[in-house]
Image (cartoon, rainbow, N blue to C red):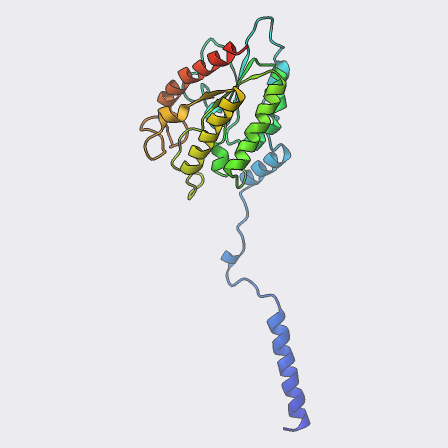
Length: 255
């Protein structure tokens, strides 16, 4: 092989190497991620700006005066199951004056962040806390039973420091979450509920067992008690209401 042929071969080899190192364009337009709809982008921006959603009840909280002498104020803190109660489905303790501080979609870390504003500053005698199902559904990321339990411990400690009697409801049964395909929370719900019952007993809190009254053998809702396997129907709330009332009455006895 003469010198000219050698040089040509080397140049061809270098060109091949350089081309191999160049980033390759997507084979099709499908390889490029589709842009998020404007409404979804705005929703995400809003959530990032106020992750615990303190704006939801801030003005209402500021407008509520301190309890008058002898008033036994009761606050409900929770997620959509509390938020919907009496607002979209069923009745919310008519004539009682209980304060609903549920926010749809929320997890226990979000409730912990708004605990001072939406609970402590209202000076309740009793707090009824129902939370945890959205943690298990991974609404704000992966969450283990231990992480959920830690958030309950933190909220309970704040309540105790502020002389608020605590009523903790069991997580409601849910065989699946339609907005989280593939997540089966039955085992985690049962595990956290067992822990909650022991936690309440050990710390002299009141435990309200909604689960046993509403669950089928597979860990889902009994027929007719939920509209989507998670959120109670009016019949579901009719089961929950007297159980919550009994829990509040027990808490008020522990003065």
